[in-house]
Image (tube, rainbow, N blue to C red; front, side, top):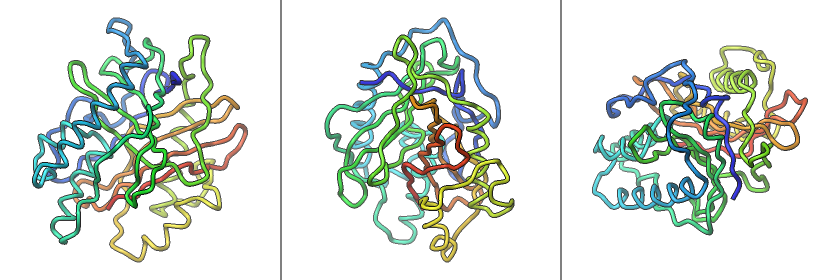
Length: 292
């Protein structure tokens, strides 16, 4: 398995949107709106086998929770599994119940071993541990496909899901630029912020496209989905969660984050897995998931 992931040098680039109405009490990792945590050199290092096992343990807890009656109505259950954009997904299940829809979350049955993307131990933030994983399991339509997920845990707690999305058909995760010990190389913070800003600009239409210095690829999921979404009950995104990412082996950048609404108008979550090739100003979508 690859040792991969970088979180903005010392942690993920954070710009957390307000928590959704009715969501659990904020946990320390989700209370900041701009600060980037500093690395810790004192806590025990998270290893790749431990991260891989954490994915399996989380899947087990997730599947067990889905068997509970109206699990989405229990804040403690949501908080035990999710943070950031993924927490919004749990809250949105309450809307599904209100409208008489079936729950949008399905049990996960992993196919093969997950690949974990892990930062250097000393690059982990002082507030906890992070990693990204690629795992193969069925999507909402029952088709087995790779998914990319980001996990976080506070000291003394189990890992929780922060963001997840299936990888688009025909796409694949890029190879990371690894250091001499096999850990991922830190992503470019400035590019991460600009790319996330461009997605907010695109979906909310408040600024000219490309104002961030980057533009969405012509064949991106967002371009195809935008018109259809606008015809429905669309609510503008208020911001995004932590941006997870790493530099790729060919000199590009990979980013993973979720866009969420204001707490008073939670209507959808958009998760994005993105690639900016070396020397390019075009954002390519490797994966995306709309949850509403």
